[in-house]
Image 1 (cartoon, rainbow, N blue to C red):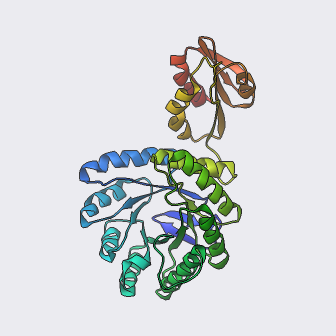
Image 2 (cartoon, rainbow, N blue to C red):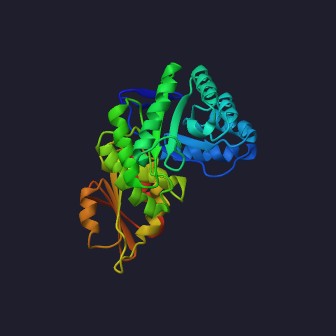
Image 3 (cartoon, rainbow, N blue to C red):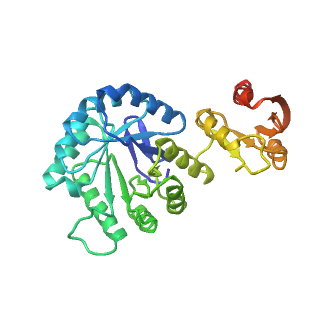
Length: 345
């Protein structure tokens, strides 16, 4: 979106003229027995807007299930490597479209060179991932300055090996440090950046902290792929990132959901209904607005401006299409009535 250079994870372009890509990360250990279920989960995440998924690659036992997942995944699969360069080599052999390493914790420079050469030979991308908690000890200055100077040092190393399929990420749990580092790096380097606030907290806290920092970065013209890191579900990470990009005008199309917060006047449980249908709505590839309203106060007004709307009044739920009353159904019938109307559009 903002960088002048592109990187490619499999066939997916990151940076350049590509849209900002949304990422999440699988959050537990995995075996071959888990592969089928995980691929189903990835398909569901992809349907609501996830472009890339990352997995920890912590031991040689991860190779077989990682390879199977990468082979069957509809989106690029990234291996997250720490400390052992041999695991990075194994992940590349196992089909990683991209690996994430911190050259500073891989060890001696020759080990990083081995990994870079293997990635070049396999066509995989490398994300240079630097967090504020694991920076070089030989550099002095502020955390953002050290992150930027470290990234530039590693970029020089990669370029000396004629490797440019690179993404950079500079992350801190402090949103201001993250923003300062990302914006400064964008002024000094043409490479695409992955942006996010690391260890951001629970879903509500993370959404606030991440939005504050990442909107600042994106508004400054930096950031080509994004993760809103949460101590919560992968679905919520993807939805929060999607909503941030949509709200900033950086993502077009898809369903926009409006739902009231519910109050004592409600006769239709909008909170439970929105939670039930959210992922199904977000998987629809139509540029429409859907309003889910609980009473007469705001319901008719929202129905008039939305493409589709549900408003609960008394014992009925009224379905509007293009601002006009389309049907009156029971609460139990509301979900299927809504999706039938959308599919018939």
